[in-house]
Image 1 (cartoon, rainbow, N blue to C red):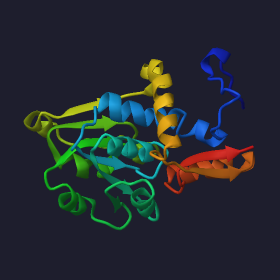
Image 2 (cartoon, one colour):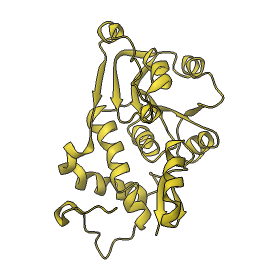
Image 3 (cartoon, rainbow, N blue to C red):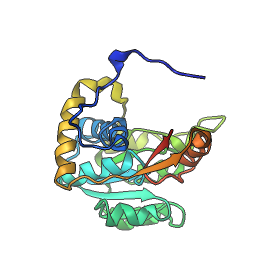
Length: 232
């Protein structure tokens, strides 16, 4: 099995580029750009917003949360296990809820007493329902991914829409393909932030093409620590 694409769809990496190939595939590539599109172009994150990011220790979530912090927002992550410490101590989130051990609803009530202004949704399912029930008036829900639902035979029933009317919420999905004209802008911005230490990132590298299936399964199960890559 193989996949081919037209050369025009590829980005040429300049010879003088100092970023690693891993970063080109991660924070400077599509995962970082997806975070930029969702948080800045769709959510229009603002100073003093309360922002919640699910899968906060993943390839997209870790960048999305940092973008919100750089905009002056207060950022709460949702992640699993050791990722919660990484999200707070290394990435600078204000707090992170451990989805494996905590009551997410109770933790959100404690950490977001005035509600959630922006929810960056990477997972769907019960986590999204818990956040949705705590959205503030004029809140924005950015639908980036639904990883909890990808292997289900039937789609989950979504939250009731009555709060959308009462709270005047905005719910918007997006794909980064609609915004590729903005990619050079993001790359320049991210490169400058990385150089000054304002953006951090990590890659999870698996050696050998024979281990690619296990790496994919691990990513879908939340075992990856950052952007999952396979080194061939």
